[in-house]
Length: 72
Picture (cartoon, rainbow, N blue to C red):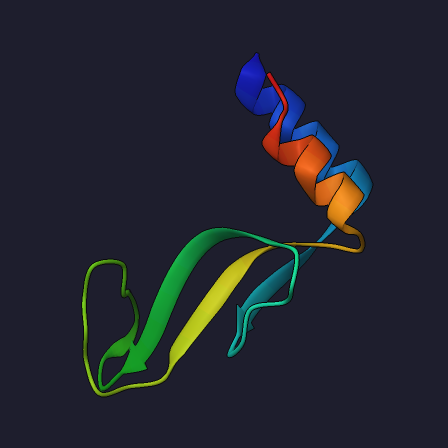
């Protein structure tokens, strides 16, 4: 139930952004990726000499972002 509430809040109050090179100010990260020789791969806990891209949810205001972080 908690995950459903989180997802519904994100859909109503945030915009999904995919594979951006820099994180927006109020941003909830869902994945980190790099584009290598054989395609995209998860770069969490990895360090290669490649640009890193971020996917997640961008909030318009600090108030909505903090409200999301405090959901229970």
